Length: 439
Image (cartoon, rainbow, N blue to C red; front, top):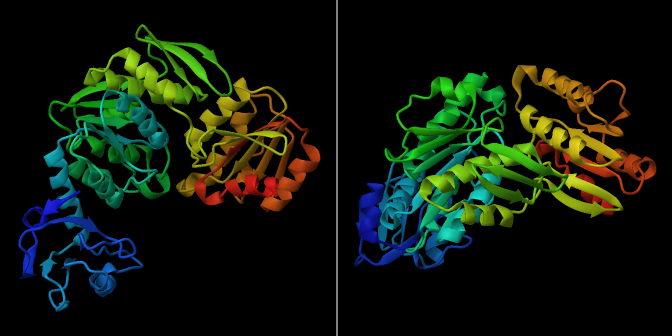
């Protein structure tokens, strides 16, 4: 992103404290570790850091100017100094201005689970129809949005942004500065219910993605009764679900699936009905934008699972599916259903705590155990304070307090060739299980 100093000042509504510049072109940097002479330093603030403490570091590296929220913070060796009340808001305004210069067709995605998977599927599809920029990894907050918008190039045709949230107003803010042409609600479940208090509140927070949707755009949403309840119908809406009469699942294995949708066949290199459901939102987005089913099918076939999301590995003779990027009651049941329905024996569940579930967190874990009772399973191994409540009847269940205890049991008691599913919230760090097994 390169803008003239005048554009940056006007876009950010900055007050000029000092200016000796002849309106050169600049980028924005928020990190003095990677800053260059062609950057303007924009110091961000957080609960445990204040970027304004590093203004001198930026100037020492040759930058010509900086933003500040303190009119008294003056350094004589700066060519220009710009004052704003809020540097994060200034960052959002500048990058939004730049986006509006490029004018990419914008797709915004949110959901209680699966949004990163859908973003990656969407990217695989749309890149076959023009230059496409996407949110990096799971950079789905305000700063992540700014970084994504900054990465746009003049010939960018499509922009795909992921939007996360933990409370009200967060997705609305992202929608305001992304201004999507297509807004996708992958699903609305119980993730973050501990913060928002109810499923209805979660649905309302997800629906904020449509607040600044292009009037000629479309909302593509999972066929969820709460989303339908709060939909103000101000925009065209397309609902998708596994119950759609246009959907026919042809083949399902533990690593792939094939299905027909609206008269065309699609193939995914990832298992699970939930991933078929995820892909339906991508298909609908592609069709709305005018992509052919052939282009969409090609892109979906190119998609491969990302790290810790149904990542299949062979470790110490075990076939391990690592799906431990995150976990909530809906996603853990979807993963268990896929794994136990389409994986050959011996099959082993390794389950950890689910986070941010509020007052009913114990009940959600107990219900997971009840859910497992409906399937054939050789072992259920649990790790974590809450996970020990996952105790299905008539199943070989063992609980462990440490990763070492768990992996020792696996090596000593599980036969080689066992198929193992790892599922837990990210804070459980289940990747350490694989690392310990390798050691």
